[in-house]
Image 1 (cartoon, rainbow, N blue to C red):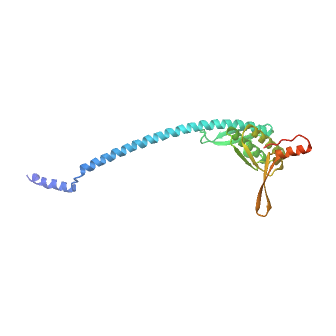
Image 2: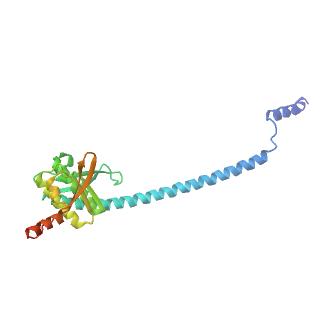
Image 3: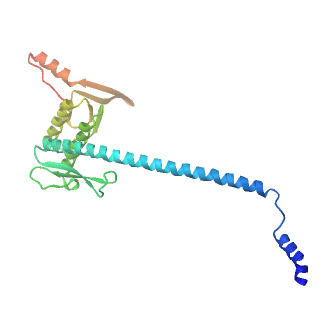
Length: 235
């Protein structure tokens, strides 16, 4: 029949439309399957690595929160005690704000000097802010002592009465810790309460010279010269 006569031509046209025969098709299929298997294994390895990393991050975050809260409680307790010592009364505390997660939270300082209401640190006078900040710095040192502490012009905004409080607190910190305190100051009251003074002088133009005075030894020598007992000093 005519339909049977057209079938060879139809199949030939269909074959031509399929394009040239790829003699490496079977090999390429095997290579593609191998590549797919390799990628699948790498994907599984990456997924396992991501899961392990997330578990490690969770563990570190939990440990970090616990350590931060312990340190915060210690610093807060020392801060309240030192603030009351500096101001001879009053109260102060630290608060974590803005987030329930300690790792994302901010820190607010609240202070209540004697005779004043509990308020934010920014509402205190310059001298009160300086003393409050000093109490906080020393609270951190009590929680985690350091071999050296440099205090640069901390007493600049303080009057003589508050400078005396600052020096007495410095003496207490010296007794409680093994930290050496280096105080940069121009205040004669503070300088008179130190163990040793270091200064820079310029005997000649453009030539600087470091001068050191051991006040404890100088006071002892002066007392011996006068025939009386030596006076002590703090650092």
